[in-house]
Image (cartoon, rainbow, N blue to C red; front, side):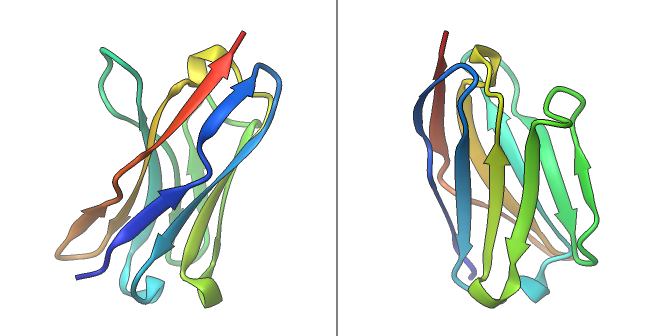
Length: 115
């Protein structure tokens, strides 16, 4: 079973940047897509960004133009570069990997943006 481990969260001031990483213990080629989700206190988990097996990307309207999802297949790692952070971006960020038969989640990493 492939495992996902997120890192890179922390406390940052509004307007700042952070880069999240999601390291997969197995081959990323086994996944059809990899995603970043986030969940703020009292809110539902929401999809932030997705990158599919061909490298195509999608973003939620709330982060488009500020966040960039990418991957390094050689390192089995996915990234989320977050810029121009806003207090509304405060949440636990999760990575998710999807294959035809499985959906795997990481444990999450906290991102807190102070105003």
